[in-house]
Length: 190
Ligand code: AMP
Image (cartoon, rainbow, N blue to C red; front, side, top):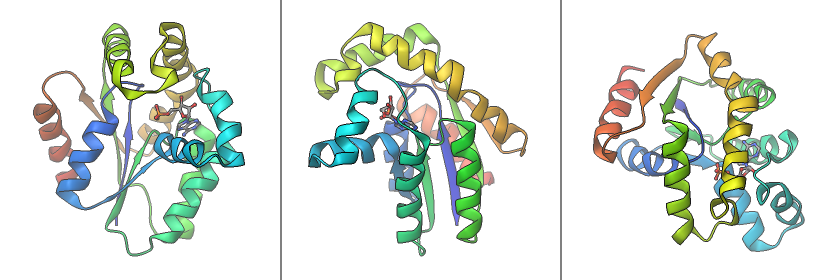
């Protein structure tokens, strides 16, 4: 099993690149943002609770996302691999993911971090907000809050994987194909 953490700030292109990766490699895509939006669409208690954090650009509690990811990993023992997109976002989530994968006799193979400058992220997210229907893409102050949360709480996750010698950094600016080529070079070497 090849398990990859696709990392980067909101608007870095993780969702777009995940689609290309699953198409080429047949991995299972696990996006906690997508899973949470699915819970909201179904009107579950978890979704109603999570929406309050998400609409403000805050993180939902670690226990919620760790539980969701645990269920998905356990439900797919035959997977070729997983792409973790938007997870882990805290060091506590990264530690829990290591434990979870060990329990399932596997591990993270590598992290791929997409680097994009802040002003480019804001421009991209405001543009996405014109069509995404996402409340958290519409308002510049919420977008900036999401980027602040990333800078303050999520960037230590990259250090966590650097400490395990698993960090690969990629320039997230250029055409989608160029960025995907860089990603495949990393994946093929894992
Ligand atoms: P995303 O689709 O990855 O941009 O996530 C949208 C929102 O869902 C985030 O701003 C958070 O409120 C929430 N979320 C997604 N993934 C996580 C996570 N791993 N930990 C905490 N909150 C998350």
